[in-house]
Image (cartoon, rainbow, N blue to C red):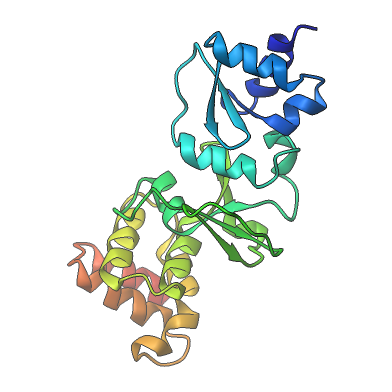
Length: 224
């Protein structure tokens, strides 16, 4: 099989992207990749990550390339069910959900094992995320919206920015008020509320942005 066909097969299930290690495993040598790049058939989008030219550029290209770099030998579709998969989190998860206005140029992931990166625009958090707090969003494993809010609070992100994200995700019903309150419960004391009072903390955050449905969602969470 010609090199172009081999890497096209790799890229087909990875948003038009493939890694150098995947190409080598498929029997495509560096010289072949260099010729394809010179011909304009492929382009380098990150260290060791390439994109097939000729089709539309995928959304969140930088985030996708950074995620592929974390496990460059394994195809994207093979990672999704793995317990150690890197999960898009924090500000990057907010970007995928299209909520808030945190910086999308820092790519953030949470992994259960220690891993390092040389990239200044990639931030790795260590932790194991329960399966019920992960969803597949735009083809990437991503923390659910409720978990996202808890992660941002734990990371000391400015409360007003977190509040805006909480309000937007509640408007879009990405997670229920009860889910959000439960996620916030471990952080309640730090904000002056009694231990485990996630509803109180949610009420406080939504008040920062004068959320119009605050009484409704807070009442729903209290009655759950």
